[in-house]
Image (cartoon, rainbow over all chains, first blue to last red; front, side, top):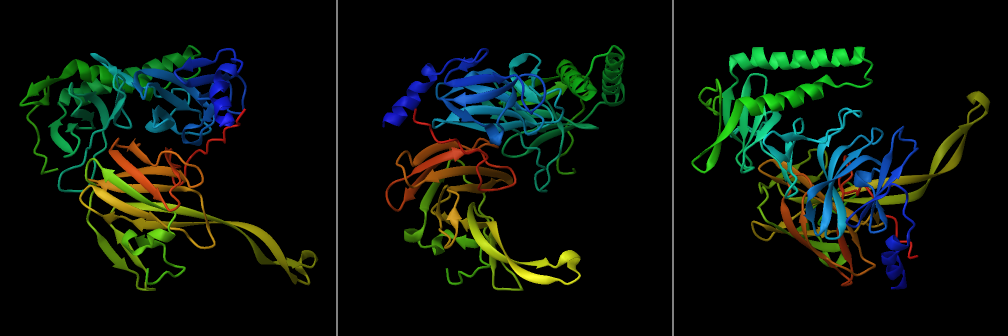
Length: 265
Length: 196
């Protein structure tokens, strides 16, 4: 009993490390030099106990989001290269901090903090993993791209989530898919020809040119794929948008033809 | 179980003796999981494998002294075998399929394994419309705290309410981050509270 009382009293008794940040009962402590490479790394403490998300003892960055769970802030955390997990959502459940993987690590120099959806800045899109995070509620939004009747799931890049968070649009090489939750794919559209060979090709070319220029200018790390992805999301929001129809949302936009029959796919 | 041989690693909860188990684990799914039970028998032995039902995966650990054969006799011109003692770490997993009480409620029995120690963790695995979900739990039968929890799964955020029943009416149940690739293991063991 005395032990637990002392443990609860410990956080206030502990001398604060310079640069340590307190977020609710979380304490984010920076470490300058470690075996994990240069730059500050952080240790997450929760109620005077260290918390290693997915067994990772130092993280590269921590950001709180607006949402809270059990009165504690929810955190976005990025693991370092050595542990190679990715972007995590840390939230407290029944008094224990737990993590959910939002985006697997792809480029250690450009961690994926999620792209705010144009027009809905509270919603973060994790395009490659196909997940979105509503930072107001802390809800992780997933969509199922399974084709009805056949077991298989189509892989696409998440572009936009509908205003009610029920359906989302995925971009593929020659088509746009609208995926729901329980019943899998809702609709599929042919990607307009001028988008595929025209505007999207221009995006990739300009992202490549920017990256090439950055390397000439001496910028150390440039990821043109990440840049192209951000530009694609902006382009998608400009060209396509959601329209309410029979208490669901439909994708409309310039050059978008009628929905393709899903059964033929 | 009629044939509790060494090769068996899959069980049905209804065939296990709950009084000899580590704990009984009740789950209520907010959304019903897939239930398409199937059974297969291996040709080589009499083992039966099951599928299509929510199940738990329970790892066990063993540390034992094993005697191995070493060879000596300088560069093996005259090889002399000699016994060599080695400490070995073993791991073994049990798969226990749930007993379906109704569409949303399942009961699992977390069995003991003779001569093996439990790591005091296990994972619950299930599918909903072919979407796989895994959630890992840690338990403790020495201390006393909450044994009924409302939890959210890490991948799809399904809501479950779980409760554990320990044989000595004392115990603790917690959710932990699963260790990828090792179903039933927690990724992180929090250090014991220093207690000042």
